[in-house]
Length: 296
Image 1 (cartoon, rainbow, N blue to C red):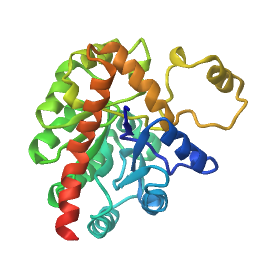
Image 2: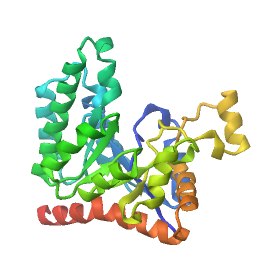
Image 3: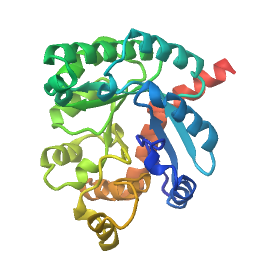
């Protein structure tokens, strides 16, 4: 039977609170056996860690990551980075990556709305990105990297650090050449809702050509909703009529994303599913188990 992992889901979001037990049971029924939950700011560090501890293997496995997202840097200083460093060291046997971290060009372009210049925004983002990459290097952990209009700025940092366990380029959208640049550094590419939009031709064509060993699945739920092109009538009615309080996206949509991926790849579905899980094992769990066994 095929098994699935959602490599990027903000399961601690309030959008999931009321329905979480039912949602996890539904994931289990769909053979979605693992969900990786990145943090985004100091405000949700404890929530992510508690969620993973409370629900681990009940009924599926939930794995936390700790990091500060470039969207949530307003008001943060080196004190917060020092607190993150201490928490990661304390939680080393429980977390499996540093993330979600990265650089965001759209945030920089709109810096004036946050009382910054474009230059200051980039400096602030790059300082936090560099610092967290250094933590990953020191702790021998992979990273989950957010990008938007920033491939050219992210790559020099990744080349400089050459992380042993690399990580995932979250929500990859870009060209074949950009993808191969990350792959050459050992990174996997997070494949999510982007490929469900027919207009995303550049990314879809790149993913058709990339080695299957470089891909992992993700939803980024509750964000990054799927294209309406692949939703059924009931799902469309729910969204268009606003008849429910369901989130815009959910980890159960990993199955829909997988089906779209399988349709654009040449390999058969079982081969794709097996390789995707093997990729997850390689990037996260092989080193995680080794580190945990050494420290236990």
